[in-house]
Structure formats: structure tokens, C-alpha cells
Length: 536
Image 1: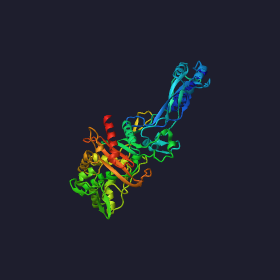
Image 2 (image 1 turned 90 degrees about the horizontal axis):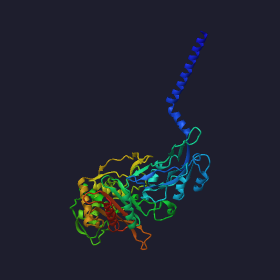
Image 3 (image 1 turned 60 degrees about the horizontal axis):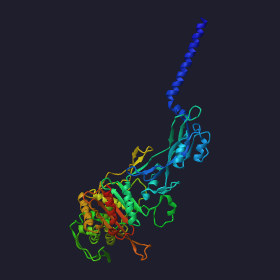
Image 4 (image 1 turned 180 degrees about the vertical axis):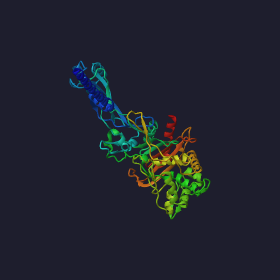
């Protein structure tokens, strides 16, 4: 009986111990499964750093990389599996330690690579890293950033997202004796395809950069989608080589300036806004006639027309196409700067066009004075008035879209590390607001067609497709120091749309000191337009 009692006690003790063991196993496997799994995996892997972290890329609308990355061939050498370390060392021209997995860059001929990777325990790996070995498209838009975070453009505006994070390296799976498991793989860490996707179309960007740089010394070209208001191209010249930033630091040519977002004297393109105000506020009709004798006196000062011999008697519509100043002098004095300024503000002048994206856009400025002379100057876009080519593109877009002003778009998505997953880039913008009536927009649209058909913009006519637009020659009052004659600078502009019957694109060309917009900018508009249509 005593023996039976001891057996019962032993049985109960064993049951208690087993219960405790089962409870501990349940605690480990269920309640702390994640914790111990991570700890176990950490013990099973050896991490090897192989390169510096990779900066995010900047992509165009079709995920074409506008910035660069490069791939370097490396060799992973596992001494435990390598049966000919001396041969591998000789081919790599490197000392291979008998312990620990090592990674070596491979800079040898193809024949030697074949010999190297035929050795057991030596496997190839392609390592991606950021690079500046090639000049990207749209350098003045993309910009540049240094290791201290100083720079400009998209690189600067989105640095917090694009900057490198983590370390690129390898994880190698080990066994209980800290040796690589036979047949186990190598996990690459920190490799990323993350970035920012723009609305830029790299084909259209190339077209703009080519024709702009070949024909205009200093200026810009912008193309936007007439329906979506996506910015398809933003070119500026002169530009810079990203691989030689230091070479431009003392330059006087402004290679780092993005002229597409720089404010300039506007000139006759402003007549779009003056005409809008005059028609909307019933100060004029398109059929009203005006007589031009080459200029007129305003408060004891002579205000000249572009045609010193005069245009004779013309309707407002004809005067717009021929860029006659006389009707606009009269309208400006009658309307006043306050009313015209209110329309200019509604069209987007005086404010940044891309809120939420700080790429250094200049808001420009409006006219402030209200004397008769100041009213007359403002009406033709002269005086203190300034605007950027990007703002002008938005003005034309409003006309093409029946008087509705839509936000311009430059950034589409944030791209995740996998290069596939996207998060839309959003800013607090409205979907569009009516600025002028559809009737007024159509009237100005028709005037822009006449400008290209038989007015000052005939050099912009696109073969087989036609176009509409407005020329401008904007006096600045600044002396051109590069000119031996000491002449004042006159900026040239052409802003328009194509095809004529159903506009798909809006394009703005600006030439610093281009003198005549019809002669310097309209032909570039034509070249860009024809190249785009041929590539569709």
C-alpha cells in the first residue's frame, strides 16, 4: 500500500511537470510566437553590408527614370563551399579570408568572369546604387541636392521622401554551427525602386529640349495636356551638366535658373486678360472698331503702336490678331487697373501655380498704379506687370477649357520600394473654377486662331494641324550689357494651342531678349508642335 501511495505521488508530480512544460510551450509558440521567430531568424542569418544606401528615383508619367541608377557586378565568395580560394583570389586580385562570407566588386573581362563563377562557392550578384554618371532630362526641373541637403528643384522639394534610408546589404542563412546552409539563398536588403512619379512625358521633354536649345540662347518651353492640365514638358536653356556642378558656380549665364517658373515682363499676351475683362464687363464687343495711326498721346506722352505707320481701322478681333496697341490703350484707360487686376488675379497672376510643391516658382506681380498712362501700359502688358511661362500656360488653358481655370499638375504619385505600389500625390486644389463665360472664352479662342492664320503668329502654324496663339514682344527697360549697341532688352513670347480644331496641347515659348515673339518664339512653337504630332 505504501508503494502504491508513492507511485500515485510520482504520477501526480510527473503530470504537474508535463502540464508546466505544455504551458511553457504554448506560451512560447502562441503568445510569443512572433518575438521568438524573429530572434531565431536573427540568429540564423549573417548580414553583410555591400554598398551605400540608394536614393529614390524620379520617374516620368510612364515610369521612365528621369534620374539615374547603376548596377555593379559583384561576387559572393563563401570559403566554406569554395574549393579553390587561391584561384578565386587570383582572378579577383583580392585577398579572400578563409572564414566568413565576403563580397567583391567584379571588374574583369568576360572570359575571366566565366572562370570565376564556375568555381564552387562563388556566385554573382548585381548591386544597384544611385549615380550621376549621365545627365538626366529636365535638369532645371529635377534639380540637384548635395549631402548637406542644399539644392533646388524636385530633388530638393521631395528630399524627405527620396533621401536614402537603411543599408543595402545581404542576409545569408546559417546552420546551427554558423555555417551557410547548403542550397540556401541570399537575401538582398535595402534595395529600392522608390521614387516620385511626375506628369512629365520624356519623349515630349526631349523634343522641347532639342528645339529650345538649338534655337534660343536663353529661354524656356512648356507643354501641357489641354484636357488634364498635366505638365508634359518643362525645358529651360541654358542648362547644366549634373556631373559637373562645380563648373557652373561662377557662371554668369544662369544655368541653374528654371526659366519656366521665373517671372518676366509679359507684353501683349496680357491682352488676353484685358480682352476678357472688356468683353465680360461690357466695355467692348469683338466687332467694335478702332483706328490706329501708329500711336497716340496720353497725358503729354506718346504711346506707340508696334506698327509705326498704323494699322488703320480694325475691329477689336482684328486688332488682337495684328497686335495693334491702340484699342487696348483706350480700353485700359476706360476700365482702370483695379478691374483688370481682379481678372489677372483670377487667371492666376501674382500667385504660385503649383501650391504644395516648392520648386522655387516666382509668383510674379501685378500693376499697382492707376494714372491714365499706367492704365494704358497695363492693358498691353507693360509696366510693373510680370508673369512666368507656367502662369501663361495656365492662362491659355483657361481659354481652351471654355473659361474654366483648372489646377496644373506636375506630380502624380509616390512610388513604394517595390517600384509598383503607388500613393497618389494630392494637394488642396479645386477641380476647376469658372473665370470667364464660355462665350468670352470662345471669342478669344477665335482671335487666337486668327493670330496664327493671318496675324502676327503665322510662323507658328503647324502643318496639317493648325494652331492658335498670341505673340508678345515685352519691353523691359533693362539695358542688355552683352550688346555693343547698349540696346534695351525685349523678351519674346509665343503662347498657344494645337491642333486648331480640337486642342490637345498647350505650348508656351519664351526667349530672353528674343525681341520679336513672332520671329523668335513662334517658329520654335511650330517645330515642337510638329515633332509632337509626328510622334503620336
